[in-house]
Image 1 (tube, one colour):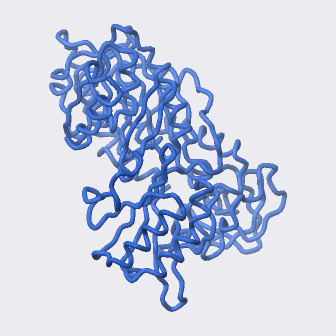
Image 2: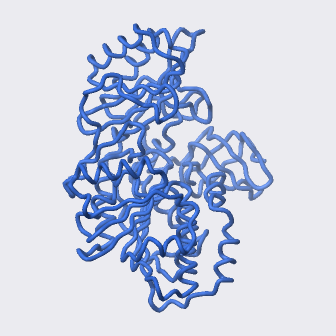
Image 3: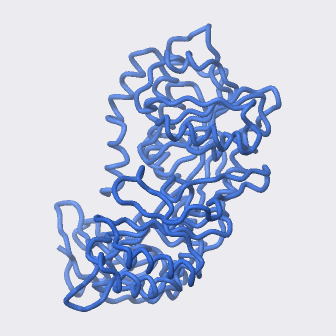
Length: 480
C-alpha cells in the first residue's frame, strides 16, 4: 500500500480526470486532483490487489497546465459539487486528454488506428450547458432548500449558489429557485427541476410527486413573470410533461447553416451545447460528402438533428429511431421545415437487428450513425453479416459517419467495421461538447475498402464473442 510519506510521479490522466501513477511496489494509483508531471503525496481511499484509489494531499512540481478552477464550488473537499471533474486543468489540455482517450480506446480495444486524426471541435467553455437536470432537496433541519448537482461521489445535493457552466441567466436563478421552493407547500415533494434553453426561451420542468395547490401554482407564475421563464409540470413520467400556461413561445434550437428550426420539448433529448451541435452537424455532413443523387440512412435519428440537414443535400433520407412517438416528432419537424417530400421515417428496435432488416430498408450510399452510450453493436454486426455473406442483391454504404458519446463502444463497433465488414477508419476526432467534464463526444469516418479480404462467418462469430455483450466494453471502461 502507498505510504503516507511516499512521493508519486503522476504519469498520465485517465478519463475521470484522475492522475495515474505507480507506487514503490509498482501498483497503479489513481489520484484525484493530480495532473501529469506532478509529484504528489496522497491519502488512499480504496486499495485492491492491482490498484489503489487516492486523493492528493500535497503537491510539489506543480504542472504548468494546472489552472485556478472557475467555480467556487469545485474541489476535492467533502460537499464539493460533482458536476465537473476537470476545472483544475487548462481547457486546451482537457481536449488533448479526451483525444488521447479516443485514440487509446480505438487502438487497445479494437486494434484500429485512424488514418488521420481530425482537429477537435471546440467552443465556449463556460455558460454552455443548455440542458441540465438539477436535483432539489428541502433540508428541514437546516431550514434551507438545495438546488443543483450532486456532491462529488455522493447522493447528497451540493450547496451551490452559482454554476458558471450554466447560462448566466440560469446561474443567477439558483438562489431565487431555492427561495421559491422553500416557500411552496409541496417543498418536500419536489425532487428535481429539469432545464432546457432554446432560442430566446428558458424552460424549467418541475417534477412534483403530488398535485400542486393553487397557492403554489401562483408562486410559479409569479416567478416566471419575474425571471422570464416557462414552467412545465411533470406529475409522473416524461409523457406527462405539459406547460403550466399554454400559449407561450415555442422551445426550439436552430441549425443556421441549413436554415432549419428544430422545435423540441424540454424533456426531449437534444444536445447540451447548441453552439457545438451546429458545428458538429456541419462537419458531419461535410465528412459524409453527400451528393444530390444520394440515398442516405440516418440511424438513431432522434428529432431529425442530422436527418433534416441531410435532406437539404441528398435525394432522400430515411431516419430510423426506436419509438413511434419520437418518429412522429421527426415527421412534424420535417413538415415544419418543408422537407416532408425528401424524408421518410421508421420506428424499430435498433438494438435487435438482423442482416435481412438492413436489406429491407433498401440500399443507401451513405449512413449517419448517432447511437446512445450503448453504441450500435446490433447494426454494425448485421452489416458485417451481410458483408460476410457476400450478398449480390444489396450494396453496402460507401461511407459511414459515426457520431459517438462513448469512446469504448465506438471502439468496439469500429473493430467490427474494420476487421470484419471491410471498412477502413479514414478519420476520427473528438468533440468537446461538455467542457470541464470527463464526457468524451467523438466522430469517426469509415470508408468501404473495395480491396479488403472479407473473413468468413466463423471470423464474425469469433469477433463478436471476443467483445462480448453490447454493453460490456463501456461498463469495463467506466469501471477502470
